[in-house]
Length: 197
Image (cartoon, rainbow, N blue to C red; front, top):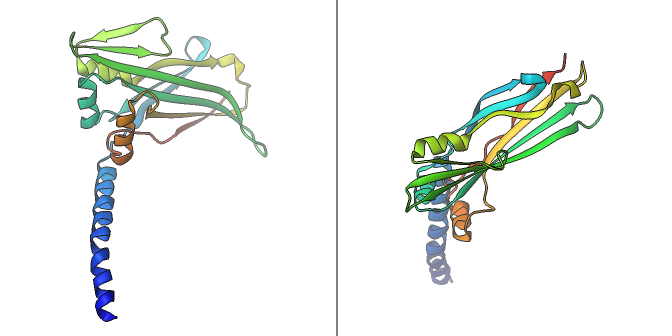
């Protein structure tokens, strides 16, 4: 009986080792995961419109750069919400904006093409990877709504987040992202509170 118990324990060891190794790899990948964040957030009322500018920092991991330079297109998705804060009631969502920035490297021409969903008819071309990254990560003077539409004395909130979109990636890369979180990113929600005065 004692011999059988020891034998069954020995048979279980390889399974436990494999599980521990997988957990360690996943944990190390989490620790190395890109800590993308939104910075330089500016809310303004230019030309009588409420506008928003910000920059996505640390979005490009080394793994992502390698995939891009092999010709795979990637998309960054930015979500912006404007809510009216109401006491003793559910907050009212006023504006819900989704912006996609797509980057594709043409291996033969050695140039990057950037397409922004907020600029429908324009494709930006550059040979510089650094410039392509800057174009992908910057939102400048995004029009939220006319400032006059906000009511005097009311409280409002802007919420912003960004992520690497999985929708347009090949299935093989989606599974890589699952097992290697360092490959992709999703920022926290950033909240700006303000009063209309």
